Image (cartoon, rainbow, N blue to C red; front, side, top):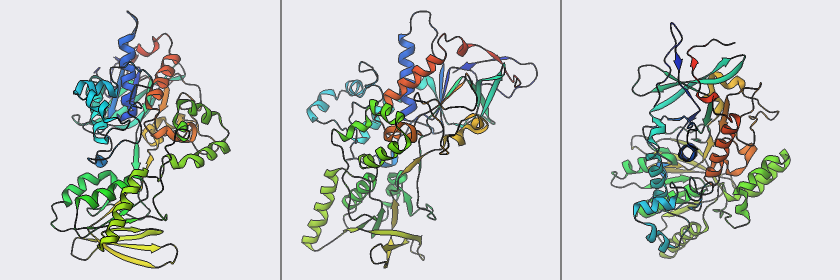
Length: 459
């Protein structure tokens, strides 16, 4: 990759300016990298290539590794991969991956739109491995500083802590695309520990616990897909252990994946949502929450109910569904290495104590706030009356003054672009729209490739 800008000193020297710098390298920015790579390969002879660099603080590509259960399937069609909805002929599609792996015919014979989650992750890794020329792993962004030229912000200096460098290095770019992903959500006052987990870490934690010869009880908190999958997994893999599913509902609710409801994830729905008044946005989110939030595949609900009923018939009930309950406290046990969970029955107000070998919180995620990553550049971002970032239809962040340099968001835009913002459904289309916006703001391409003086003072 081009050399990074070191801390300026002495006589200013020309430094390299990237066209695009991506923060985070999960599926969203991976899709953008693929779009850029395809653009560069198709560009007319003599036209400059887009110069892009993506920074990822993990040491390698990974996407929800803690929930890659061996039998879990995707909840979206394989056609909603990283590229197909943008470019059906792409060499980076899930179908191309299957062909490269020698499984295309086998997958076709399987007659499903929903591959195993572990297989789709392997597809993502396959695509990421073809983009190594565009990504730096082990690189964590610590600050973003505006670069002023001629009275305007023409670029950003992105300070990065890299694993092999003693101090921060700086990469200069005209456009920054933030896809920082999601951060886990835990109930207030609950701290994670060796026996209190968030489902993000489930597989790693449970593998360590499998060395325990006789776990007696697991408590799983949550009513969504991840909670149900974990409950089913523990019940199957630990055949002598009690598994308690705790949620404030009366039962698991099925996900609405019917064809008309699924239109909320269509690219055209983004236009309709973006243009809608605030009250209509809230109405649409409320109407369609059951397509994604705290819902479970109907097939999995039926499987768990079958298990619970079968145990009731045989008289040995290991799967306990503790409905209309809320976990109100978790603390370490005495000296037995276990934890004590206290539940409150919402209808009666009664409290119940459960001693458990582990308590797993499948309590969801929230988008990482992009302002925290923007550091010194956050003052440039415009905020609306609702306290939320102003974001254009092209995912470009509105600014307090007109600036040539661009800030784009992937994933933290549900308030402006709708319920699909944090999901895979529109990833491919969104990547193409962001790329088109970047190209449109620099039609000639010359500004992006100019060299500027290191340490140029603000105008």
